[in-house]
Image 1 (cartoon, one colour):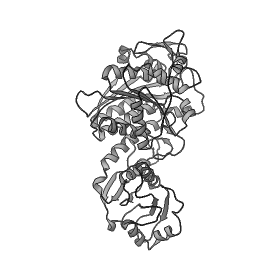
Image 2 (cartoon, rainbow, N blue to C red; image 1 turned 120 degrees about the horizontal axis):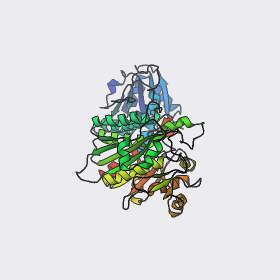
Image 3 (cartoon, one colour; image 1 turned 135 degrees about the vertical axis):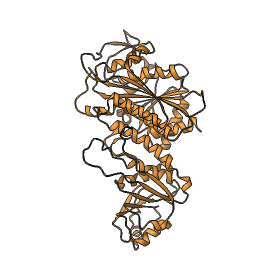
Image 4 (cartoon, helix red, strand yellow; image 1 turned 120 degrees about the vertical axis):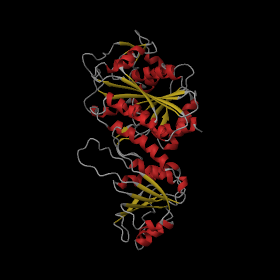
Length: 490
């Protein structure tokens, strides 16, 4: 199996007050703003000879917000190196509980942690937040890294907290983060395909299509993007058929540009190193399929990703070239740095021709314009189907992953008309993220509900997010998993 950042193993147990004194690493206590102590917190207070009560009486939590952590270091009467007092209300809503748990994951480090969550109703969300935040990408560092120790959560009703569900989601998110974090000389198109192929061990059916087969299929748009690179272009197809036999699947399509120089339309040097994350859409699709397989989802879902590298060379596609898509439409390439839509166009068409999906969602780090419009808080949502977009927005809100629907229309579509081909691959500076979506819509067959997620602003960020340290966020895995559960398994 391919290397993956280890997840803090989660153990869920019934309340055991006698185990608190002997717990090593960190012990976390959950306290609301009212300062009331549950039985576990009272035991901690007794062990520390009243230190917890003195902290609360001092007013330390009066101005605290949900998710704030106050730490008592090296508490007397306990083996633990620290007691972390987490401000979280007993009736916290799922996202609030998850973000509070993430605050514990942030301070956890590599050592063990015991979370005393008996009073928190959303203990599973609290645990998921802690596991998600306890992440560090260190695969390319030579220094020896300590082994990640586990998280134990004590709750009143262990049967209501599923460690397996938490781990399935976290594994998918970590898989996506690892892929997005990898440098391009390590995550080549071949290596990316290998990591996807390795997921057959989880029960996925995986097919890797090479350039010769893509040429036979007529994927001229996708192949044109990789012409300048020595790395072979590929399409990886993942099938999870856990639903009713013969039922049309949901198709997830991802842009997998493992590095994007811009091609002949070369990007500026400043910041180009970040273009290792331009395969973020494919990373999310792979991570979502991993989670679905791990939790044995009762749904039919296919994931298809186009894996290419966009490089300048004597073979590279030039601005002004006209390429032919698998659909048969011709595209005038005005800007070779608008390459992701060319990759998606062919993979989307193949997905529809092959699987006749009940709905199709594509994900891509597609445009800088969406960052200008929405910053790093929300992905852009574009759709031809109100029901599908509403369902996704509901799922993304439930998971705490920001998304915002953007407009589409004929006036924007007119901006990509070409004088010499069926369309241009760009429509100019104005409304750049919308014209990109309009381009993709031309490759959606009649009657197919479709949604495009432009994740350029959320896939990898320069500051910590609620669930992740700065860098790759894994945005979208949880929302897609929730959408599948709501739409196909509900």
